[in-house]
Length: 114
Length: 113
Image (cartoon, rainbow over all chains, first blue to last red; front, top):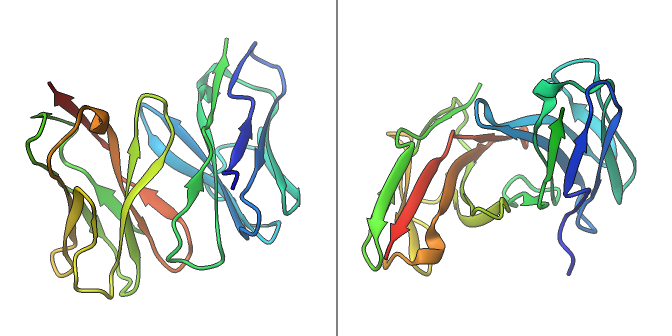
């Protein structure tokens, strides 16, 4: 059974460019989460969805960040315009509709903004 | 808001020995779940073990076990018979009724041959 799939695995781009990160959750999982990992701040929750609807986006750092989930099998996290301080590893995770089920993580996207 | 504290930024252990990683948390909720995740250099986030707060029995998964002290809000991870492949960053995490995972800052464990 396929796990959470993220693409690209690595992204290097110049400041000011638009960046789009993609995620395919595990089939049947109703919750999808986007996290950012940096050395300074550790793992931070950015936003999460339930049944494709954004529930809590309080972790989204700025208006430059946006996330969508057009259907149950696909989500995007977009940064426009990108800045060097956005450089981080971005993880997507999904879980079933039960709080005691662990979140399953994708392999992450390492984003470098030059 | 929930907080998770891992007081040991780095630890090391000799292969085949036992090591314990510490974690404390703060919450006003009564029903919640605790997890330990492992992140090796490949950067995957791998679930190691989980504990339901309403269960008094400590969870065990092969060489991994926890010491869950609800009153003290403590959730330590014990790794027995350490192996070189256990070298990784270990994160303690909390989830309550809002489904939001709160992570500690992590402990970098190095297993030495």
